[in-house]
Image (cartoon, rainbow, N blue to C red; front, side):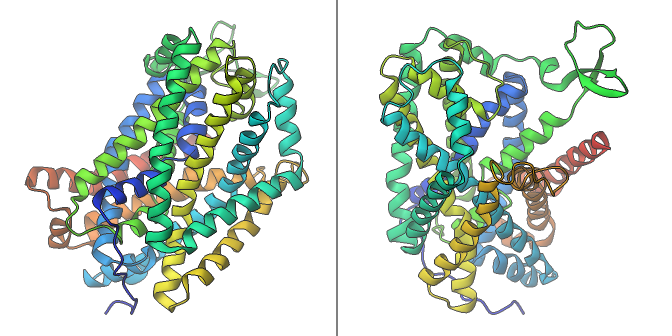
Length: 482
């Protein structure tokens, strides 16, 4: 018998409400902050293609798997994995995968809220005109001042967590539904406005499109290295003694980002799926969510890269692309104060729509398993995440030289651990669980695919393609790191 766990009777008002909520979970800092800078880091169009392939052949099937598990079980991810495994005659130890997902969500939100705090700070500062006609190089110092001030970071980190907790505590209808119905249309509208602004106010819109979509596989998958005093260093291809070396880093980055941006492997989609209307088609709903998430990522690139190129900046400038390069660009462009403020408000909304999904699985577990009040559960878990986030706050200042985790700060370690290990591993196990552990009749009934060919395609992807792809990338990356 499965463990005794109260199921939820609450459902989203409509299929589109679920789509907005799940898209809100998927669309976040990963789309607007991380996607542009890793695209720049790994060479543009070829990386975008790899990312889209990861989304289509790995992300989409696992998204469908999480949604069907959540809807059939009608409960939190931990209990859902355990209960359905028992129902299918498998060990309830599968519930550990749910626990790993909830833990990953905690880790992500702890540093995610810190970065979201940067966006809140910049919304205020750009709105006040702090970056107007700023001198070249000054924005780097301004960003260093922000992350070097633990009190300032703590204020924004705390405020963001309070807003997140307030929405979660209000429940499914008054909290989650009400918020996504406002946030998601606003996010899409602001993003379209930013793309139009980039098109009208810069002469580099074409260059931005070319960078995003031009295919240069060599630039993405190969580096040039040489030995200098016994150490391997990166060099330009034209330099004497350089050797062309294949790198799997873009594959791992693309796969990790596909999981990160679609909120896979952390229980969020499973938790939201528990509230999914029975009549909603999982396959078409999942495709719609993936489509919107991908469109947001590409629109973000179309808005950001023309502005960056028009101001003579590098697209591969890393995380500083959003918080150093863009503020300087906005500060020196027509109407930059207005549109810069709108842009960082957009980033803040995206962050909040994802944050509420990261803590929902844990809150759902506590309220359903132990009948704890939703407000109490939300306050408890939010405090835990806030406390854990102090480590990320201090990673940029007081603990900047403290690197106890394989030479990484708390912030860098949590980012690497979740994006490159926990989420792909969790997603791989969920795919195996849905493809091999669950009864075929159960999956057929939930997916309700009219064409058996589509079902067989999903099953082959979940059973073989997605798990093997994740495993191969892990092994290649492990070998290269030795």
